[in-house]
Image (cartoon, rainbow over all chains, first blue to last red; front, side):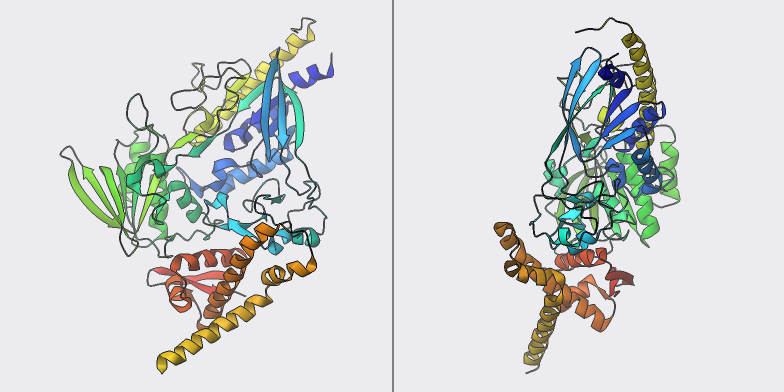
Length: 442
Length: 117
C-alpha cells in the first residue's frame, strides 16, 4: 500500500475551529484518525470564545470552551493549523487533496512562550476585532487571554517594523522573515465547520446602527458582559460611559428571505436576547428592559417556560412591535418609534441603549463547486440526509456541522459535531477496507 | 482675573501631563526612532506618531486627575481634561488593559475609575 493511501484512509480534515469544529476534531481523533484542524484566525475558539455566559443555564462560556480548546491543542491525533486557510480541495478517487496556506505570524510558534512582553512594548495600538472594536490591542497580539495556541501574532498591516518586540523577546521568537507556507495533505473525509458571521445591521437604516454609539449589536453586548472583556464585565454606554438603565432589544435583525419577504429566523436571537436581558437585570440595579419583536417569539420545547421566568422573576417586558425609527437625542439617549398591534398604533420609548439582536449569516461558502455541495436559500451548506441530526452533504465523505449548516445554538452544534465525527469515522473505516483491495480508481 | 488664573492652572496641568508623557517608553520611542536608525515604515510612522503623542499626553492628564482627586467618573474626567466622553472612555479601556486603572464603585449613574499603580 502506498503511503498516501495510508494517510488518506486514516485522516480527516475539519475546516473551522469554533465550538463545533473543535468537538468534531476531538471526537474523530479519539477514534484513532489523524485530524487536520484548520482555523483562519490566530486562535481557535470561534464565535463562542467571544461570548460571556451561555443559554440556558448561564454557564460561563470560557469555562465550557477553554478546556475543549486546550484538549484539541494537546490531542496526539489533532494537527492544529491555526492562522491557516484551506486554499484548494481536489477530489481524486476517494482521496481529497487539500492545499492549506499557513499565514506568517512573524512569530515562531515553537519559540513563543506567550509571555506577552512584546505586546507591552509595542507602540502601536488599534481596535481589537475580537472585542468588537471596543477594546484595544497592539500590532503584536493574542486576540484574547485564553487563546490557543498561546502564541503571539504580528499584524503586518499595522506593524511599523520598529523591532522593539524583537529586542525584548527573550525567546528570540520574532521573525520578520517568515513567509507564507503551503501544506498539502490528503484526507478521506472532510467536516465543514466554518460557522457564521453576525448579520450587518447597517442594511436596515431605521435602526441607525453605526450612526449612534449607543445602538450596539448583541455580540458587542457579549463583549461588554464578558468578565475578561474590555470593560471587565461592566456594561456601559460607548458614547459617555454612563450605566444604561433603560434598555431596548430589537429582535429579528436578520437578512430578508427574498422568497417569503420575511426575515430569516436566526433560531437563537429570542434565547440570547432573553439571556442577555437576565444578565443585565442581575448586573444593573433597577434595569428596565423591553424586548421588541416584530415576529412571534420562538416556541420550541421549554422556551415558553423560559420567557415566563424572564417575565415573572426578572420583570423583563416583551412587546410585539415593529420598530420604525431610532433617533438620538442630545443626551445620547435614543428615542424608539414602533408600531404595535393590528391597528399599527404608534408608540415611543426613550431608552439609554438599544441592542440589535442580529441574526446569523454564513461565514464561508468556499469549495461549493470543488466539492459539489449545495447551499440553501440563506447560503448555508445543506445537509441532505433525513436523520434526526443531519450532517451529510450531497457529496460522499463531506459533512457539515454547526452554524455552517444553518443558524443554531451551541448545544445543537455540538450534537451535530458528535454525529459528524461518528459518521466520518465509519466512512473512513469503510474506505480503508475498500483501499486494501487492488481496485483503485485512476 | 480668576478665569486667567484657572487658565494658567490648566496650562500647568497640561504641561505636567506632557512631561509625564515624555517619560513613557511609547513616547521616548516615537521621538528616538530617527536617531536609532531602525528601518521603520516612514509613512506608517508619520501617521501614527502624532496620534501616539496626543494619546500619551491625554492619558497622563487623565491619570494625573485621578491621582490628584481620587476615583473619577468618565463624565468628571471629560470635564476636567476637556476631552469628550467617548475619547476618555477609549483611554480608560486602554489604561485598564495594561492594569493601571481599575473600577472603584459607581457615582451618579457612571462607574468610578481609579489609578491603581
